[in-house]
Amino acid sequence: MADSSRVVQITVVLVGIAAAVAVGWLLFVEVPEGNLARLVGVVLAVVTGVVGARAAGRVASSQFAAYDVAEVGVEGPISRDGGSGRLPTSPGGTPADEVVEQIEAADEDPSARALLLRLNTPGGEVVPSDDIRLAAERFDGPTVAYATDVCASGGYWIASGCDAIYAREGSIVGSIGVIGSRVNAAGLADKLGLDYERLAAGEYKDAGTPLKEMSDEEREYLQGLIDGYYEEFVDRVTDGRDLSDEQVRDTEARVYLGGDAQSIGLVDHLATKKEVKERLATDLGQDEVEVREFEPERNVMARLRGGSQAVAYAFGAGVASAVAGEDAGSVDGFEFELR
Image (cartoon, rainbow, N blue to C red; front, side):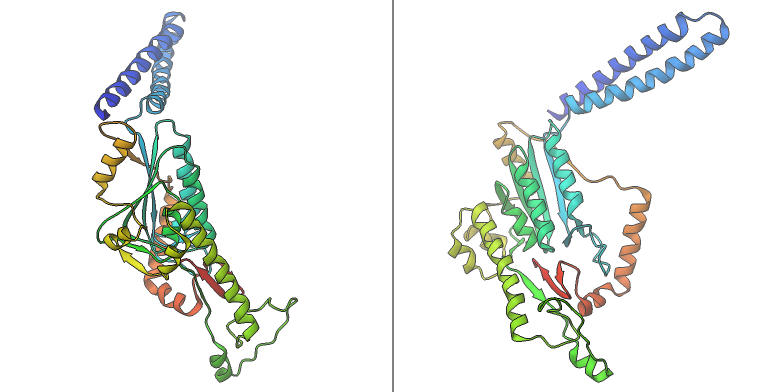
């Protein structure tokens, strides 16, 4: 299938080049008179041929593509923009907006008849994870989540919205839960002689602030937010999977190896990527499928930013995050994460 599509593409491009050169020759060489005009005509004919070749290439790529499955990867911690919060996150984090853009691009591509969502993530922010899930749900065609190393928490939030979930025997899957955290620096502030002076409008505006002890009312308020996120998580899983509310809650936010995850219904099949492609071919009624990875185009500056972020992380961002918390969605210093 891929070879025949490639032949058609090359044929279309060659025909486009020939037609463009012929038109250019007619317009710029045969019609004008004089040697200078003929020389200019030859140049213009070549330029026209190049433009025609590029146009024909675009037509060939869109109409006779050598792929029929779009693959989009979700790698590393999930955040809105891949880690532009207060602290550098680990290199290779997932900018949710970019993932959504790639899924939407695949959905608009007539050649992409199915979506393969490759997941290797411990989770991350709540709303960005849900944005990716919703984009996958809107894809017009079969959607498959493939868990490689880790598909936990926010990753499973996303996977549960796909038509099927595949994993490896050694994949880590699950963690259907929500965590809220804060640094309690009140004792340290006392030792340093620092006082917390409250200037706020609204009783719970500074709930979770690290420099003061949390009251019982504030703790109950923040726990209520966590419980709300958890209920939403449970609803997402029960809606997307053939599991009852009780089955989902009984996991108690544990993670499972692939085989155990399959036995309790968190995963449909254990398979390698090759086997996933074979199953997709069956779903599409074909002998085989070809996969194209959709990923954002990154310019030089974006690549340099990624490199500098990696250096910053290596010099202690991990230590800093343990003190100040990751910016995963917070209420005045109290962090919420799907992890």
